[in-house]
Amino acid sequence: MAFVPFDRPVRAAFIGLGRIYDLNVLGYRGNPDVEVVALVDPDQQRLAQRQADWPDAATFSSAAELAASGIQVDAAEVLLPVPLHADGVVEMLGWGWHVNLQKPMCNDLLDAQRMLDAAKASGRVLRVMENYLFYEPLRRLKAVVESGEIGEVVGYHMKMVGSGNGGWHVPWSSFEWQLEQIGRGRGILVFDDGWHKLSTARWLFGPIKQVRSWIGTTSFGSGIDLDAPTMIAWEHACGVRGVWDITLAPDLYLRSDYYTNDERWEITGNKGFARVNRCTGRGIQQPSLEVYSDGEMRGYHALDDDWASSFRDSGRHWLRWLQTGEGPLLWSGEEAVEVLRFALAAYASSAADGIGVNPGQVV
Ligand SMILES: NC(=O)c1ccc[n+]([C@@H]2O[C@H](COP(=O)([O-])OP(=O)(O)OC[C@H]3O[C@@H](n4cnc5c(N)ncnc54)[C@H](O)[C@@H]3O)[C@@H](O)[C@H]2O)c1
Image (cartoon, rainbow, N blue to C red; front, side):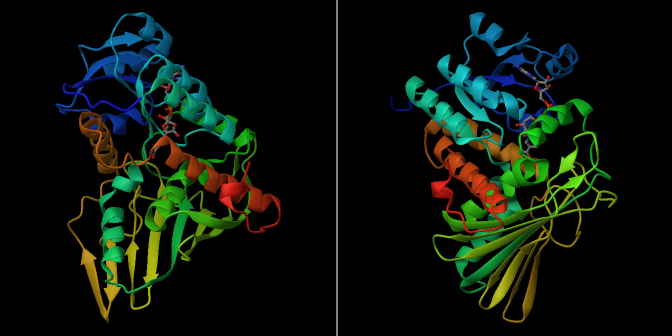
């Protein structure tokens, strides 16, 4: 069934009103493309708190109650804990709702296929949002590289240092399901936050043909096993190689309005380099993008480098897309499966002492 664009504001429901709602909501506020008709969360306190944003929206403890209520929903903004993604999304697509899902899509290929099948069967659109692809310094980085300013790309590097010191408050309840994920071998650094880094790699240089990795563990007791130190390297089908190192520095204080992650992307060309110095946290407080070429360094001082803006723009993109059906979804369900395969290939490689694994062949 072909998608038919809406010619009126989309009636949307937020499913899950936890920590990340605070940023996802930015694409919805003051947006004429959408009318928020319902809020869903089993936590009554959260419902009451978020109702202040949308006084006219109806509130429910479960998506099933909303579906049975007779309130018409066109699209769901799904902000559920990851262990609930697959069943929740299959159910919502079955009710005829389009779905904008937070990452990671799900834990394995079987669940991913169930979700794609449900979208096909219902003729509804499944998007797995990737806010990093809307972060202006990264968008500008891509444009700089594509312009040829640093010459031909000869390789690139991503860096992430996880720290527990600084940033916004994350309630313990948001960690509980992460512990469940850790127990299933889907760690916070490589799989949860890492999903973004793997996404940016796929977005920058296209499909991946081989991954080699060495995933470590740092244990803090009580099942809190963080997946660092880790090194992952890969080659794209276009021949460009990338490498990503993940380090844990638990006591490193990092100024941040959000999570405490020190992140960098550095692309080397045969006559220069371009580097994004930060993203979620404020590690290096130089211009968020710097470009060195022909003996000169250029700093971009006026980019919208507030990480929250990437959520706003990703949400607006989705809601506009529903009005036009035009342009890339960033990501479609199928593209998100490629990101999942990239992560699964990293796990398979690490389990086999770092051999090269083709993401297209993981099962
Ligand atoms: N893009 C990013 O950078 C980013 C950052 C953080 C989290 N996330 C993703 O966002 C999602 C949510 O993460 P979070 O940190 O907000 O988690 P959270 O635990 O803070 O919030 C989840 C909310 O879902 C509610 N919930 C639980 N079961 C429910 C159900 N059956 N129906 C409706 N609501 C239910 C909980 O009560 C809670 O309010 C996850 O997929 C996570 O990976 C993405």
